[in-house]
Amino acid sequence: MIGIDVQKAAELLKSGKVVAIPTETVYGLAANALDDNAVLTIFEVKNRPFFDPLIIHVSDYEEIVKYVKNVPKFLDKLAQHFLPGPLTLLLEKKEFVPYLITSGSPYVAIRVPGHPMTQELLKLLNFPLAAPSANPFGYLSPTTAKHVYDQLGDKIPYILDGGPCEVGLESTIVGFENNRPTIFRKGGIAIEELEEVIGYSFDVKPHSTSSPQAPGMLTTHYAPKVALTIVQDEDDWKKISPKNNVGVLRVSSYLPNYPKENQKILSASGDVREAARNLFAYLRILDDMNLEQIFVELLPEKGLGMAINDRLIRAAIKE
Ligand code: TXA
Ligand code: MG
Image 1 (cartoon, rainbow, N blue to C red):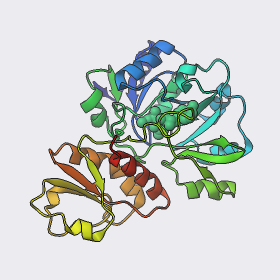
Image 2 (tube, rainbow, N blue to C red):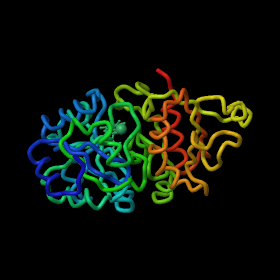
Image 3 (cartoon, rainbow, N blue to C red):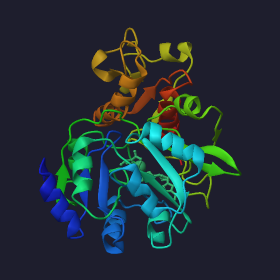
């Protein structure tokens, strides 16, 4: 069931149920992070392997310190600047934070979502919410309540509808590794924005779904059902003819001489924020059109374009 009753969502969560919640990045599948049974239901509903750790969500910065041993100075600075917002901190967990959440790691990923409805919800609860993106494992992340309903509607009691997600990409995950500030996942805040605030550069780790213990595993992710192919060369675009039963996702211009109904344009004005907002929704539309293949164009490799490209490249990997 889809609704806007925050109180009802809170009651369900208090009784150990899972509820889909809106965030500014993507919809999450939430449960009490400190209740192993509730968290197990998340893994079950998503069909997610236990080696893929979950992010916990809290209402404000002061809450973060309850769950972690300490916050390194540069992360503190980023937190002050960007939270609430699409930034996740990877920090050493306190003993009582369950290993089920962290897949056995001593580090926990924690964030303060900015969506007002989820802010209100978190304030009604005296526990943090574990929430992965509310999609079956490996599929595109949901950016509307309907996306969640279409795939998980019969498995969960309630979907809190906060409208379409404003950012449309998952949070950027930052932490510390080998004494260096490190990006663990490119996401809703561009790396350049983070670097500007702390005044030096980040290492960027190739993002693995599967936690630091198993780098490189499961690189395929965010994948539609229909095969997706990246096209970089203008000549290759020209080979696509109206005879082909294929979909096209381009950055800012339609492919000429090809039916427009099979095409989606991320942002006609080339606005990268708009492109991020539309990315998963447009891929879903194309994925539901009974096409043989989807061809996509990458964005310039900077700012949010880097995070969008990361999702497209992962979606195109065949394993
Ligand atoms: O924007 C977001 O972050 C969304 C919304 C719902 O908050 N959540 C999200 O969660 O994207 P999920 O479960 O789809 O992705 C979580 C990823 C994991 O796959 C892993 O790469 C990383 O976060 N992660 C979580 N906990 C970690 C940990 N303890 N150590 C290393 N990586 C971790
Ligand atoms: Mg996910």
